[in-house]
Image (tube, rainbow, N blue to C red; front, top):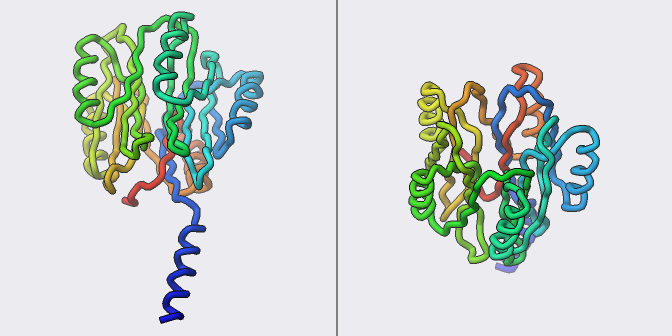
Length: 276
């Protein structure tokens, strides 16, 4: 019995020392401008790269944040010849709502928003660019609430531009959605599936109708993995790639770039996702 107890204790210590499993996924497309990527950065390094890459003609296009073993890691896509961005780390939803109003009054538009929770506090990484486009940022506590909100805002000609699910401070999955005013007939379409095969079949049907995936997210809720996509009319089709390590993901990106001239345009980094 003593040996069994020691073995169980040793196994528990070993389990606690295992690194958190992180999954990388993204959309690859053909693009005219050059893109580059940086992974597993701290906040100071991300800010330093933003200034350095700007001097080289690159601007932030997408930022992903994830808490791994208690530390926040940032992953980013940089695009050549893109609009200049301001990046801010905002603590708390109420602060973000107030800041969004202030920035809109100064003619800034949110282009990308990322959420994570660390030590019981919610944080939001926000990218802004100069502009006057009417936009909204919404935070919903249920998928049903998000769907109802999505349909209502579509009637008001507001298009969902970015979506993600994240574990909020209450320990539950919340949904963050960014909407921009629609100025042309380019409505975006939202789809979610609880298995990748169903998601992939639906994606194929949308592609045949001329709709392409531009934002891809996956997350886990109550032990179930969900796959979420945003689609719009486009000729630029692409591939979804996934890997369970940064090294394997970067290798896949390199292979697609060399063999098919496809570049990573959308990045998602998540943990606690069931393997397919």
